[in-house]
Amino acid sequence: MSKLNLSLACWNYDRTRSIQDGSVQPDGIDINYHDLPVEETFFRMLRHQEFDVAEMSLSSYTVSLFREPRRFVAIPIFPSRFFRHSCIYVNAKSGIRTPKDLIGKKVGVPEFQMTAPVWIRGTLSEHYGVPVDSVTYYTGGEEEPGRPEKLALDLPANIKVHAIPDDKTLSQMLRDGEIDALHTARAPSTYDGKNVVRLFENYGDVERDYFRKTGIFPIMHTIAIRRDVYEQNRWVAQSLYKAFVESQKKTYADLRETAVLKAMLPFLNWEVDQTIKEMGANYWAYGLQDNEKVLSTFLKYHFECGLSKRLLKPEELFAPETHEAFKI
Image (cartoon, rainbow, N blue to C red; front, side, top):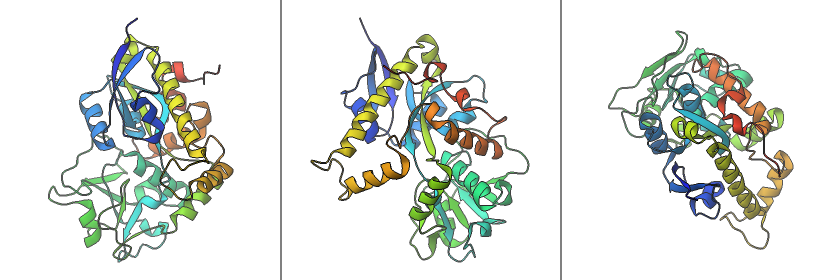
């Protein structure tokens, strides 16, 4: 029986590598894996639907659910998760020493709808008393000028967002004091620990404390299927889900290997042991049921930012075939 040929755009992660090299194959599917950086994948999928399946910003995907026609349906696979306290940068002369000092300031962000800044804004609001609408946001390219939002936004009047000039970058503006702070996924090139600093330089301790208090390991990306592909072959959602889970299992096993170090980290075994001790054996959980709290928190933040027109429930994000974890 012939298999369905599907293109998959996703970065080269340890947890997806077995799909990339073919050692894990989704039932009934031949995968053509495109190893692309996330910015390119997101742009090409959101603007032009170039791939059958793609890694996608959780925020961008959620925004897309409020557009007609709905072009994508996701499965509860999360190739990227990241604590974002480390991703708040400030100009050292801005007077920002504590989170509340951000109130009333000019804050750069490459795109307002990016997932990382959604988590940052929500965390600052809920845990540090910095309301989402208490700052003015400036959007544009971080290192290269002229970056637009991938999806056009329709925000409430209380959310103030302005585009920076086409000939400027956020990194340069932060260094020069034209903006006071930057919420971003990538460290700006002007970060030097002197003129540009992190709001939380001890971010490792802060992020661990955040997890202990909340139990949340923030989700950044999901896997989205082009809706026309899904509607013609509803079985692909479960088939892809199972393959991503199997690929991740191999990575879990590699990280627990004690005969050799399979990643170039000298204290890998210790780090893995500590992570399991603090976060549990399935610390990078896939599936809807194991991620209800983190998804509900994200969706609350997304709504509070004005990016969702109503407060969604986690199950509304994913193909119904993947709502329950399949167990043999």
